[in-house]
Length: 89
Image: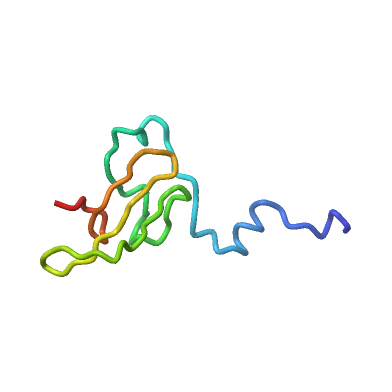
């Protein structure tokens, strides 16, 4: 394939939507962080860090709220909490 027809890194990101990014900061995101923070999900929860995962556990609180597993692939946190990221009480 002709190299002039290959997409550059920036072009590829814009084609993919650019709605994900690496926001890992070793000075802040360490194993004592304990929970999600704004940088994990971005404004309006529209731009998640590449390392953040939220999975529905199919469990609910006594009041019926869904419980999710929140994990950082870099080890900053791993806990069960509510949809918005608040830890489960």
